[in-house]
Length: 157
Image 1 (cartoon, rainbow, N blue to C red):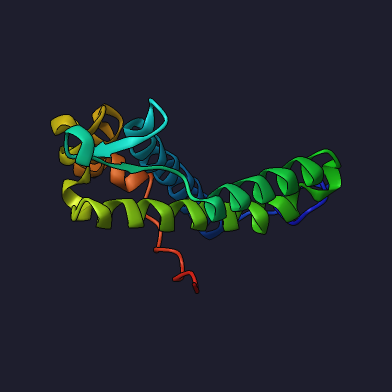
Image 2 (image 1 turned 180 degrees about the vertical axis):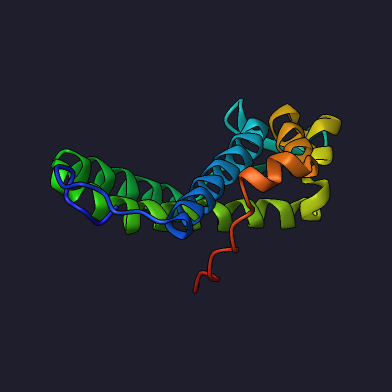
């Protein structure tokens, strides 16, 4: 998406496959995010019962990061010539932040990536979206259309 929006696009099969990988990565990240956030529908997640229950919520750093990404996204998207910058810069940074946050949530529940959907479906929230995504991954025809992208590079803390 580096060409001006009024110029003709030059594309190859390799570029289309790369775009497909990127879209799949975005879709998978948003599905994982939706599944993870379903745990927090009431504003917090409680572990345990009674007065000794532990409450989990969004940290101040996470809120700051979310607000920064949202503000940058809104600023750049208000100017149509910045679209490619937002798609390759801030949007990718936001996706990496989401992935790392979901990873921390998975670690919190000591859940492996293959069983995250099962853990959510078994009482932690609604797992239908992730289960659907897993069933798509099992279908060879669907996988041939939308290939799984390479994982993003690790985020430095």
